[in-house]
Length: 119
Image (cartoon, rainbow, N blue to C red; front, side):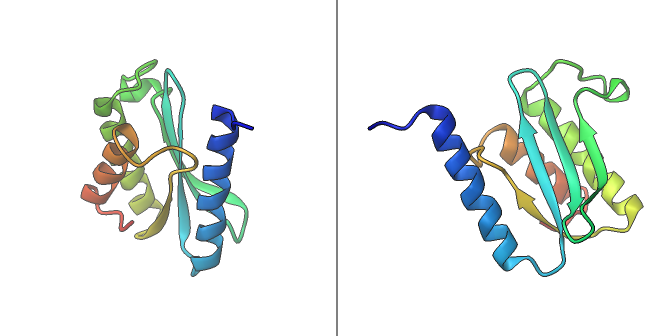
């Protein structure tokens, strides 16, 4: 029986999260969500169960509302790196969820690295 696209996405997401839990050494998790119209990212402390910082194209001050392209992902990645530094976080694990690591997700990760966040 063939798996649906959604089932394959969920399997990938669970595989990534379970691996991150095994290798987590108390570092924060940089979680990415990409929809058809926007892209967002959160810096999550799994031990406390709290979001430390977040950035999204839905924020009006970024000027990218409703955009989901590589340029928007780069801007969001730079913003989350800046907010992470302000919160005192220098390194994190990159949680791509079920999304493949190319295109917008890769651009976001590269921009966060260039902003000084160690992923």
